[in-house]
Image 1: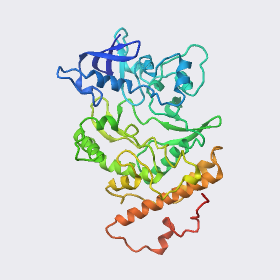
Image 2: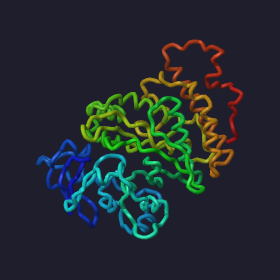
Image 3: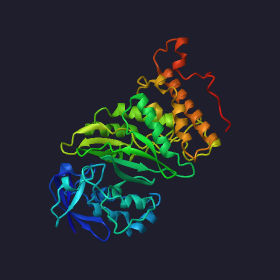
Image 4: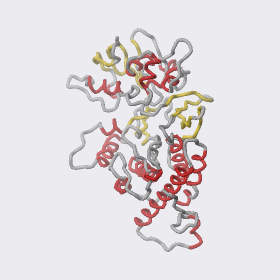
Length: 411
């Protein structure tokens, strides 16, 4: 069937999509090459590479790794998540791309999920719930990424993403909330997550930070705009692509993301959970996106006796260890450590709300967070060109190695 690839109101390319598989067979005509999805290259004949544009299209679908996907597809009576894409015209709450069937006179203003209602049937199916009556597949959940269960809802006119955790501790939603608290205290641009509940299930809730005027472009697509030379690092390559595209203040934004990831021991900062924001109409780059998706952190999948905050920790995306990755940060002078005083107590109050977090786990996690703050402060002090002698009266504003509250729990 023939579709028009649209970027908000701009007609980009005429496509043929095979209904049996939901994949793009070929590009019939290209109108606005500058509006093609980032990273889709042109052939010598001036058309998008079929594999590249199909990879982008299939990449919009719910990933096969999504928890509970098989059961959800059975509820939805679908054989593949890719088949869900055309059911919602490929619309997303992360950008303004969509496909318009050639036999339908549709306009973006009438179908986009930012300004129009959408069905919760797909989201409910992803949480294992069946629908009453006929299933409505017009949903932004068809184009949501990530492996954890999640769904979009509308609450008080706001588009909220609700995201589950993974057993047995279901800790990721609480980690999202404490990461937001850390970034709020430090004045770092971030997507704000709060803790909510659905029955006894903890969920993180985050308002969409993309608007009807903007696109979120993943770091992966930015990285892929140029081949990495063998003599430079992944970090240098990514920064060079940001510079080539004209993304402002990329280095400073990465400094903040890597510092936060060091504090919370983020184990999964891959190229698809950070990126940049651009204007969907002018294509002007606005900067790297607010920091989001921090749940896979704070030893979320480890037993308490395996949590050792001063041991080397695995990291992504630029180095395999946090102790090495934090060295990429050009400056730590901006960090306001007094603002982090008591953040471990805030974490403790969050953890107390969950029936899945035992007392020992809570104590160990809060101790570990205090230790990570100390470690980063020690690193910042060691980097300073000159370290003034500390004023004893200021001790209460710092994390002190000898603080009487700094006890070490039994591991």
